[in-house]
Length: 426
Image (cartoon, rainbow, N blue to C red; front, side):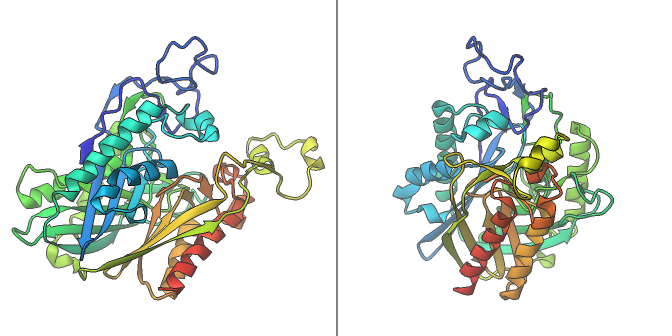
């Protein structure tokens, strides 16, 4: 685990609101060394971290990386794979995810659409710095491998989440929190592990310009403190936050540090009932994984859905054909996506390269269950960022995620079918 220590002054990625934007649209006078569209960061509330869990069996490696960032691009994973190849770790061995904090460093994506919306212009020196420090985290975990047993457990979190823009009068979200933890065979102490839970990282106020892991970081921190207490040591027990189907899910209540920390403490208190060895299931010491590239089709800006959402669906829109009118975004987003299916013991993990709605997350897990996998994780925002995904009904609601669904409602179907093809061949 490493503090990435991004330079103060790099803009925060995640919000496109006026609170974050430079007045006059952009820094035309080159006042700021890192910012162009967005205000520079002003300090640190809590560390921006990279956390790594390396699993090795019979000379084969599986490397999980969790970064306090809005998301990760395929370019980032490729650059990281180049750095670690001398260790015998290949591109397909990497599972790299962004926690989706809205208070992490920007300027790390080459996607011009994302640059304009929320992350600011790409800066090679910032990209290289984060890659190098993440590589250092992998090296540390790689050289710290020791014999361990893996344990899993889960619980249904109460009063932690709520919906962002649909089903607000319901509980239309996956409240299952799943853990996979490593326990030393030498002395029985917890070495670290992963937490899979679906929630946005937007608890900090939009005008707070400090770096922060936000709500995902707070959840991981409180679980780490609980495990440290069990170990009876001050040594950090890294917990990687692996987001789930969080596209339409946020934390419960208003924004603010006190609310965020209170909810995280409540979450850890609820989790404490199952974070005991005698309450957990010991997983078999085996894993396998398969990577597959799928065709996503032409990405496009869904003009009608966005115009309707913002209240500008005027008579001029009626001249546009069909229920969907898209502006092609070829060159901004890819026409393919890379998916990875990982089985560790009886747990199935399925990557999703972006933000998926709760409905699609449930649909993916239902498909996995039909294929014989009763325990499954959705790993959102993993190995690439291809914006939002909704099902067909949600797409035509013209909500925020509809406007950001650049592969329209068919994109989510293609990802689910891609994972089904992977599982049917296992």
